[in-house]
Each structure stands twice: as C-alpha cells, then as structure tokens.
Length: 427
Image (cartoon, rainbow, N blue to C red):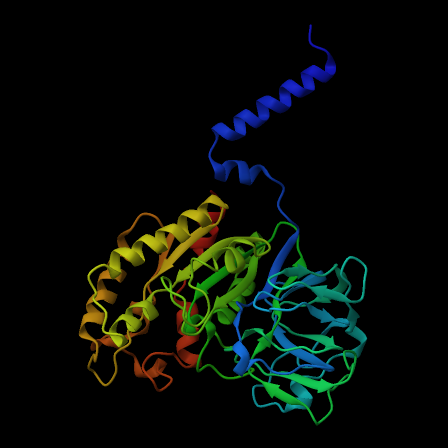
C-alpha cells in the first residue's frame, strides 16, 4: 500500500505528465492568471547619442492615457538601450488635472497634477532604484483609484548624470523636464523643456482580476502619427473607448489596450527600433494580462524594398513566414491574434511604387485568407477611396496619403468587430 506522501507524489507526477500530453495553450490556461492588467504601454527604441536629452538633476514628467481602470497601480521602467546603470532617486504617479485632455492646452494645464492623488512609488519597498543596462523593472503596487480613459502623470527624478537613451519618439504627447526634485509639484516651473517623447516608462498596470488587455503591434499608423498632439486620438485610443462603452466587452473585462507601434518599424529588419520579431517578447508576450493581439505590420518592409531598389522575389513569403511566427508564439502564450490588412501608400491617384502595390495586394490577400489568425481586420477596405482603391479616402487623409487624420483613426477603430474578442474569449 502506498503511503500518503507517496500518493501525493504520484498525483503530482500524473498531473505533470497530463500537462505535457495536453497542448501548451491548455496548460497555460490552467495556470492562475495575474490580477494585473496593462492600462497603458509603449515600445522603446535606442535614442542614440544625438537624440538622448540630458536629464541630469532633473525631474521628468510624462503624461499617459489609461484604458482600463483599477484601485491599485504600478509602473514598468526600462533601461533597455542604456549602456550604464540608470539611477532614479524618486518616482511618483498622480492623476492629471485634465481628466478630459485639451489638445490645445499649454504646459501648465497639460503637466498639472491633482496633488491629492500624488503617490510615491517604491521598488522592493525602497524609494530609490538603480536599473542595470538592458534591464526592465516593475514598481511595487500603490493604492490609487485610476479611472478608465483618464490622463496620468509619472514623474521621475534623476540626481546624477543621466541621458534619455531608452525612448519612444513618436509619442504625440508632450513630456516635460525641469531642474530639481519636483516630483510632487502641481505644475512644473516655466523654465521647462518639453518634447514629444516618452523616456524609460514602458508600461502602467492596474489591479483588475479577471480582466484582460489587447496589444496592438505595428508601425507609425498604430503609433498615431499625424493625430492631434496631446489629444489621445490614435486608433488604439479610440478602440479603448469602444471597449469601455460596449456592454458585452465591458462585462467580459476586455478593457486594457496597449499601443506598441513604432514609427518606421519593420517586421524583417531593424530600422527605427528593433524588428518586430526581436521585440515580440518585450512588447507583446510580457505585457500584463494580454490575451489578444492585433498584428498590423509589414508596409514599411514593402516601402523600404522600393526605396533601396532591392528585388521583390521573396518578400511576400518572408513576411508571411514572420507574421506566422509571431502568431505561433502568441498562440503558445494563450493569446488570440487578429491579422490586419495593410493600407495603401499611393497618392495623387498614382503609385510611384507599382511593384510595391503588387506586393501589398498579395500580402493582403494572404492576410484575408490564411487560417492562422483568430480573426481579420480589413483596414485596407475601410480606409481606401472606393473610386480609387489604391488611394486613401480624402476624408481620412492627414495630408500625406499614408497616415490618417483623427477622423481616419476613429474610422479604423470603428471598423474593428468587437465580437472577435468575445468569441476568442470563449475558447
């Protein structure tokens, strides 16, 4: 007869063997989900020596826009592209005075915080933290009632020599820096520089057990280029508002949205930031509570081939292979993937890159027909002019026939079938 301890060991071994025999997705689903869900996030690039601002002795205040709300909050900081340790003497988070953003607001209104909501952040219960080169860390949780679709300010004080080497350049949101430790100040002094970039801050999570997040992986159109600065009019912002307003997705807790678009980014090669496969772990798989991925990538690979006069022969199958690889790895982590078609890059009713248009059409046909995705979003059909299918509809054109305006970004969001998320949640 087996002893009680032997019986327990046998059951553990049987459970482990069963997990090995089952699919990876089922085993992952059996693992308790984290109660933390990303309410905001961005993707980082190497600023380089020319674009790294000197933050020595300064307070940096960055404004971000929440998607899902919660009673506790934590932040993620990265020294991914730094070559020396990053020392932060103080980190704070607060709600901004502007609950509803005013795109035309001046520095005093954009950077102003509600001082009664100001919270000091700690790292393993310490107020200061030093982040090694290449590392990413998460703060301890702090009690703060974060409303959905609201502006938050994260303030960091750097006492020693600091360069802003790890950054997101296409923020479409102003950040501010002033000399001295001003992390709790309501408004930063007038002698403050501002830049349309985020530095070191890669994510904000809220405590929301049972909820989940959508990550959008893409390039400048995902990033919101040419949308109104400080307005939160990127298409993922509009998607967050739709998910919050829809009774079914709200009830299901599908509320977090993370925008990991990088302007100029490519799938196959490094350029503006690491290639999509290289940043998959950082920007998708490691995000808190991610259960869905919108994969909207590839147009910069097609455009770059045209610009550099490289042959087209293998580009489509290579893109298909890489998008399949991203999808496979996401599926292995229990993430549903929705493929999105690539929008036109032609203007004045003509294509200066006819070979590229052939390639884009072929890639879109594959995206529409492949069985690897859990759903498909046809941005190409939504945004093109019915009379001139290779050109963006003028109503949505920001001026360059590549990037939408605010109306176009809203149309992109409105074209996404929210039932895809609900159906994927059932499986």
